[in-house]
Length: 462
Image 1 (tube, rainbow, N blue to C red):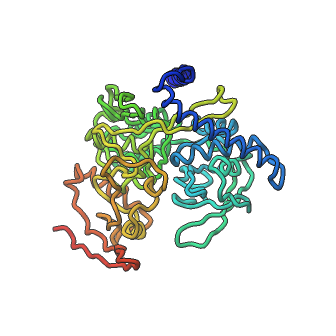
Image 2: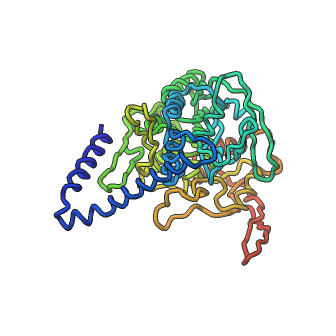
Image 3: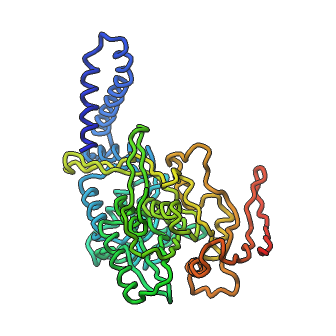
């Protein structure tokens, strides 16, 4: 209701302004609007020329939809126009059930890029990775298509095979055949590992908070003397804000979880926790990585700021913006997905572009440690050219050797980040946990037009 009220007020102001040409002030205010109308006339002229002179007949509806999407995607990577079919698909996805592959994607310079495959889906089982580029679907190029158009090609009837052409760093392009399934995404599952519970939350749809409560209750019943909980948010691309608030609320007794602030400094919404911690105060460690984005970062930031949990892993993705879905004519003309606010953690920090840094930085593998040493941003919000700016003066941490990586003796079949999270629970805090030797890494140093790689060795902590 609030959104519609603001739109109505804006329309009234424009109408009143158009009748006040006798006022010098009103005339000055009308000049930018007159330029807008002139540019809309230009759009009509271009559309008319294309209709009459393009080499083959064109579909006006497709052209206008593409123009709307182009206008919105020029603002930032997360704003877009959803045509009626795309709007229906989005609603299916937030309900947690749809036909497809199980990918969260975005667009970068006209190329579809994977944010994260969803746990247990065909895409994840096929080995699709965060940061992969999808350049073709069933042998047809998707370069230059909008995300919505590319997603349409990937979705379809369950049981059908889809061939994706993947471009991956340090690899030649290759094809992956994936069979579509009805994606009934269970976003929260839990298991026991000795005295510790592990709650994996892979996304945030309408069912996530309820699923998390049920999953935790099940493992608590199996081991009432559980000593701690690990909340695994790695490769979680985000989702619904209210579910991020709901998950955070499960572990907090009260106080602020997150605030969102729009263009007007007075336009602030705060979300607070209600009394009741479902764990009864168990110590918590949250696992994050560069695929932890958006709603998942809200949870991690809230629990870190409120001193309810310590974070282990890698700096998160850095998506600190809020998108509002605004249906057009009740959805008959689709909807706008528009960035309307930034969100802020309880301490007042915006993590847009910069991400949330863990209390204990741990690379999952030696190769990952080397990647972090080689590149300043890797795949993150900061890698998008048109991403919203970070807070003034804030930058994402550059290329560096991470604090920890698996030592030679570590079993490669095990999860090193999870092992270190359990160590933190066992010792009571990150500060009390014995630190491992910092990994040897080759840091890329740029010297003038040429670059050289210097090997940096860090002695073990005493």
